[in-house]
Each structure stands twice: as structure tokens, then as C-alpha cells.
Image 1 (cartoon, one colour):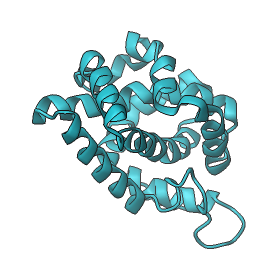
Image 2 (tube, rainbow, N blue to C red; image 1 turned 45 degrees about the vertical axis):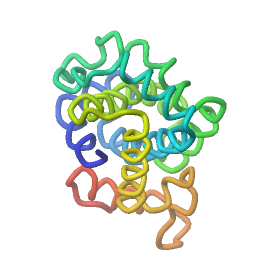
Image 3 (cartoon, helix red, strand yellow; image 1 turned 180 degrees about the vertical axis):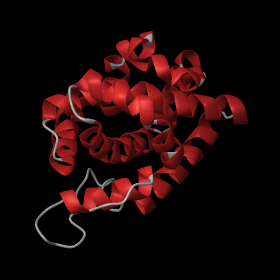
Image 4 (cartoon, rainbow, N blue to C red; image 1 turned 60 degrees about the vertical axis):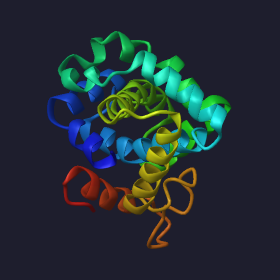
Length: 193
């Protein structure tokens, strides 16, 4: 999931997102490197209880069939993306502000840009999950297992980002930017700093 989403959010799509949030594509790539694992982690955490899994399954099944992923060219004009804030709030709940701040700190972007990025990204992540539900005929229990697996993959690909982005400074040099550069290289196929 992490690699596929990262692969989709490049080129013209990345440029469109960058334009919508008011940042350059390289900076948005750093933001995505932190934001995608954070959203996967939040969804996985939410799906760990039967009630959370059922609610998430219901919301995703009703609103996201994966078709958004087939038309990322018109991403920012898509109604799901344009109205992505309620979906983001559903994923992060009361921790939305703190999550935005931590992603901003980890990525080097200001919280305002992250605040504009996450509502665009949330429907994309949910569309991917919706596509998996539809393609694999999942139920709420299957969704719990799927999200747990994805959280594990995201943790392996982005160590430190999932514990709400703590301990990301892998080489203890006092800066997370070099670590995010390496992470971006792994996720987006570019050389890290």
C-alpha cells in the first residue's frame, strides 16, 4: 500500500498537490513521506476494535470504491478530495492538530501546508483501502487484518514515523531532514540526502 500510493503521487499528480497546498514538489514529497505512514497507522489503530473496524468499513465501502485512484489527474477538483476534511477528521479525530504538528516537524514543512495536504491525501488513502475491500471481497474483520499488515509494512519502510513520528532521527545528528530524505528515496525512488 505504501509503495503503491507513493508511486501514484508523483509527476503531474505531485505537481497538482504541490500547487494546491502552496509548496514545491520536493517539499511535498517530504510531507508525503511522513503523512502516508501516519494515516496508515491511524487507520490501523482505528480498525483494532470491532466497533472501529465496522465503522471504518462502512464509511469506506459507502464512499470509496477506488475510482479516485484511476483519475488522479483531476485530483484537486474531485469532490471527494475537495471535501476531504471530514474524512481526515474521521481518521485522526482529536489528534488531528497534534498529528499535523508532528508531520510538519518531521518533514520541515509548516503546519499550515500539512493542514492543506492531509485533507487531500486522506481520500486517496481511503480510496486505496476501498479498492482493496472491493477487489478482495473484504469484510470488517478482513479489513482489520489488512490494516494491521499495512501498518507493519509502513513501520518497516518508515521506522519511527508510526509511533506518531517519534524517534525519526535515525543517525542521532539532531536533524530529521536527512532521515526523511533517505525515506523519500525509499518510498519515491529518489536518492536521499
